Image (cartoon, rainbow, N blue to C red):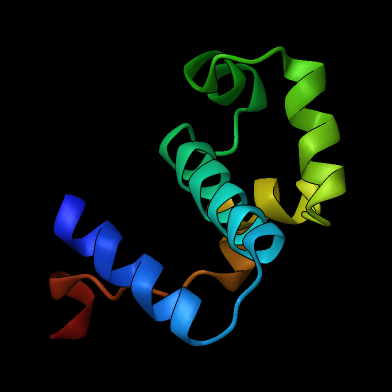
Length: 92
């Protein structure tokens, strides 16, 4: 993992990505990964990240991440939007 991180850092530096942008992108990706792991539950994600729930909420806002979109992306689609699965018995 360290080699992968080193390679990524070299690529970002070579591409001229600023330190601030690199940190912002890392935060976004890391927080989204933790949220996905907890199916959008911000309380559980904040606990894993070692921060207060309000701090996570503020951080999401600072990173321009839409919390409603995050939660909706973690949910199953409503029944009308799910693909219909035909049973074997009715397919005959």
